Image (cartoon, rainbow, N blue to C red; front, side, top):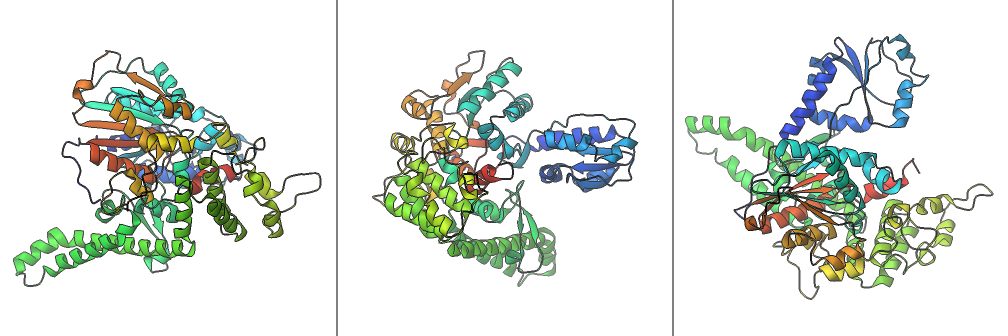
Length: 572
């Protein structure tokens, strides 16, 4: 970024320990089955497993063949079958069902738990890799994953020491805190100040619904980052092959642009290319000894950096092409107007046109949800927004069989729109908050910067840069305010608008840490239900400005598409 970090920022703990613990326990479990065995892995565990124990590690512990769980009869010649699965009823029924004929051959069936709670994605990002947490907890009311979140925090507490202060807001955060209190007899105050802040998505739905414009967020929106890894296809690699790239602080090129607004990325990459060329040009005029030193110490690193630079340049070009086709600038203008509360009629017209042009159902629903949230849910109702007659005429709405009153599209949208009050969000949203108070919250917390002066994206003045200066994420603003005030005092009006459920807890020995308010602080922020890369970028900016080091723990990395898709998948 174009700003300097405070020199008193503390160093982050080494989270590679979490990987080693998970790997060691997995190896221990595999060794409980001596001899060759076939390992069946549930699809959504394959990427996390690859980050913890690669194929060679599994082979060393007598795993013969790997299979993906596909809910069909098992074909295996091994005497030992090992299943690595999530605790899902469907999967367990499949394993124990009549179609698994291989089980007849087994004389012994045992079960055990692989206590895999946390996967470090980078120095300051840890994920539980539970994308279903959002849907299961906030839509279906299934709180089984809350216990997993509590166990993850307990693990951090036991390895890295207790939290000196705990703040939280949202129903899910409160339930998690109650669970932890039952399993942790106390919270001791630690030397140096380490706090924990919890947020659940019933507090802030607006932020994940906004289009991301920082580089890492755009890469996620465009190519889908999975477990900290992205797969660039032929449009980026300029070949017929795809390439998987780890995106973390070890990638020097990526680390310098990940938090940058996209408008700054090309200039940086251009300058980086010039610097690399200058480094290569140093070879000219070198004697044999100097050349030998250059080859042994610098050349390999330069070649790796050059390869990554080429990929990120191509990825940026691909993003630019795709966004140009999608009228991205017009979409951003609409979003910013919704956030600011201006030109709502024009915004409505843009959304209607987006629907009529059949560009993307996910994008149309995202914009509808954003309009509903920013305009207090019921100001523009379904009769004004969802012009079902036009959609039916265009073929987007398909008639169901006689006797059924809802069309296919209406039934899907019905999952997002409360049928009792037109325009409010669905079971997922309206059950958590009957009415959005975004506009009032925006005024009280100054979420929308004044637009009377131009916002300098090269030298940002606040966290709003992640949305082109239009909006400061509510989640991050709450974190900033709570840390400044050392609690929720003075934020009562805002918390009422968020339906309360805020809490604050301290160490049981009653030690006062206020006297250390200028000391370096590490703050762990837990997002229950998921967080976006934009929010992470905003917290990094805040940390550099205020002298904090933020550790982000999230149930999963999310974005607007994942959030909407979670409500429209096959489970519906």
